[in-house]
Length: 359
Ligand SMILES: NC(=O)c1ccc[n+]([C@@H]2O[C@H](COP(=O)([O-])OP(=O)(O)OC[C@H]3O[C@@H](n4cnc5c(N)ncnc54)[C@H](OP(=O)(O)O)[C@@H]3O)[C@@H](O)[C@H]2O)c1
View 1: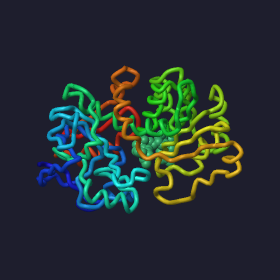
View 2: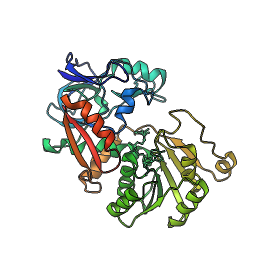
View 3: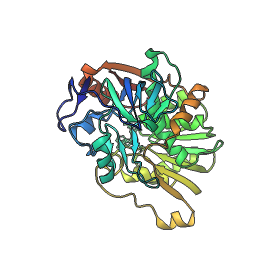
């Protein structure tokens, strides 16, 4: 089959013929129809992000595709099913603290790297082999809509965070970094989950205005000016009441102070989830006040990706019309043009656009 291969950090992807993946039990083979190219893919492939990725590898996190072949232990899937492939592969030999590797993308720690030795190759290929539990049926779709359905992978990330803080209908949530790809998806998902108000932050006033225009009166935007105390006062002033939970999705380039601005705005007994990349490139720690967390009974947690059943529930939100996939301008590339796709994704980062490969 044809695949794009990353042979060394800093070198372009090479499109070539590689051996077809071989099916084992507990796995399914997928014909990849569409797969997202994230805006920071180039930073991963250059090595700048320092993601743990054993080379050579076929990169690509997740896909929309069709089941080609099922293992002997699949009970519901049938060849031809349209599915979402979740890149979040968890080890199966420790139910309480499974190691995680994002197939074709990055590993968490030593255990994740061991898992990546086997579930390594991702979706920038005509076919991929995935654990059976990572496949979710999305129902019948028109093949032309497969690129649009790639938006599911974007929506699922903030959904994982909002599930982690147990966002309830009627609550106020602060999304820090709401002008970004995942942050703007977080605004959409919070509204779909019934948030009474979403306070959306970002530095870019033009994009904030677009977020406000698209999402309507339940969203209140705040432009971040880089003054921790002043920015937090702005947040507290626009919020209609106490902020019940905070979802942070800032990238590695952002400072801990930018995160603290949002985190310390949460109400007593509030919940905070950290999902961004802050600190991954090194630098100072978050330094949250111990006594504030203790006296105000604050919950702060991290979240990488989302639980296994989230994809099916997200499909439910979309099928019910509570969430729209049709909000992004999608640009598609063939597998042969993968390096152009990576460059395009970087040049068009941000909300409401998506770069997709069609292997
Ligand atoms: N936990 C997970 O499961 C998970 C999964 C996927 C991705 N992520 C993380 O999510 C992060 C965000 O990804 P994304 O694709 O949404 O990024 P993005 O589109 O580039 O958005 C970044 C957001 O951060 C804001 N920002 C604030 N300070 C910034 C700074 N100093 N430099 C750049 N942007 C800054 C940007 O808007 P303004 O310019 O308006 O401030 C924007 O809102 C990634 O870096 C990744 O680490 C986490």
